[in-house]
Length: 405
Ligand SMILES: Cc1cc2nc3c(=O)[nH]c(=O)nc-3n(C[C@H](O)[C@H](O)[C@H](O)COP(=O)(O)OP(=O)(O)OC[C@H]3O[C@@H](n4cnc5c(N)ncnc54)[C@H](O)[C@@H]3O)c2cc1C
Image 1: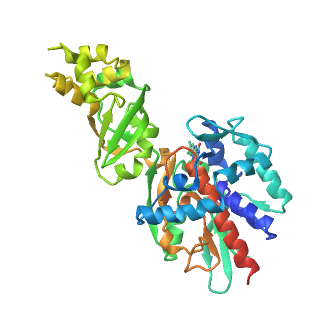
Image 2 (image 1 turned 120 degrees about the vertical axis):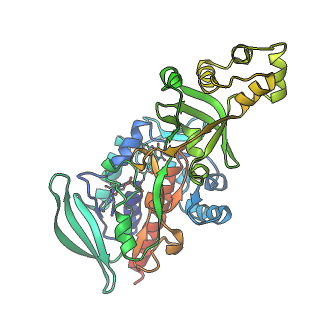
Image 3 (image 1 turned 180 degrees about the vertical axis):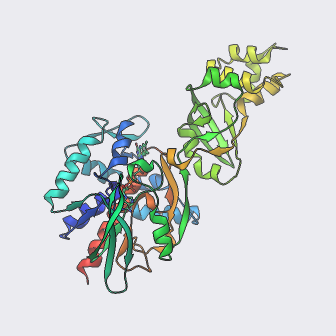
């Protein structure tokens, strides 16, 4: 159930293995979030070895070594290379940018999705749209319940479908207009499945900027900065927004930020310069440190304006204080932006509920894949790769379950 990348991949694997597959999707068409991802160029995956790739995933309630071991297995089943070959088999060539991010040549998802759906239809996969999964019974075989879903009229009559196995790939809770509402969590929770709360991930954070920072810096990037919080540190880019900050560097620190109710972000605006070299370049300056630093350190307009706004009430009174301000600029974050706006959500079905084929132990024949599982990863292609890898695993599991019974 669910026509996102994880569900479609599970359907493909099961259909290739000879299973009779039906995709149930509550929206009038499949892959709506996948199409949204295409607006940003569709970062399909990342070029990295399985070991390096696996380090980017965190799993709720799991230590980092166990998460690494789990993701090594999942990725070995369908890794970045396999994903690129798969896209190629649909006639979609990919390229790797200097950042390691992999995109389709056309930087769009629509052509890929169209050919993928055509292939699935060719494999005999049936698509039932506007069908909302509302529950299941597993006492006497697997019985799945659906309501005819229409945005205008709400749910209509309930139908029950018997199945040999089911893959739930209903997405997280971000961008609910694409169909990923996270409502499944109360249905599965009601069936006794443990679920880590769905939270915004890869999202902006709010802070209180002085008015002149908003007026002069809103929409401007802070390039090549090093940001840290709670012992985690990454290098990348931030974007100043009206409400606070966005950007890849912030997204990569998501798990560390969420660990604190009001986290503090420390920004190093000059990550390639040591404090000593900055001090030396300030030379004979004895006052107007902000102006002197802007000039002698080539701070750039946005950094300069940001520091002026933040330090207006207590400007640095020594060269050392100025160096501290630029190497450890501390920003108190208030809260993350709402999950509805986030690129993805953390939380979901806990892995302790599942066996190695991603089947819910207490619901035999029911498998889970994609963002509805309790893993999290930064942007960079790790999200879609995670959906494809877990979709492959769940699809294989469901196929094996139905053919060996
Ligand atoms: C703006 C944006 C840009 C992104 N860009 C990238 C990117 O470049 N690279 C990347 O790796 N990731 C990106 N992502 C994240 C990526 O798109 C998601 O992680 C991925 O789509 C999740 O796939 P999924 O199959 O798990 O779920 P989804 O794609 O969310 O699909 C779930 C499907 O299940 C359906 N559904 C839900 N509940 C029910 C129900 N009860 N009954 C029937 N159907 C149901 C939904 O309608 C939906 O079609 C982006 C996300 C956003 C929002």
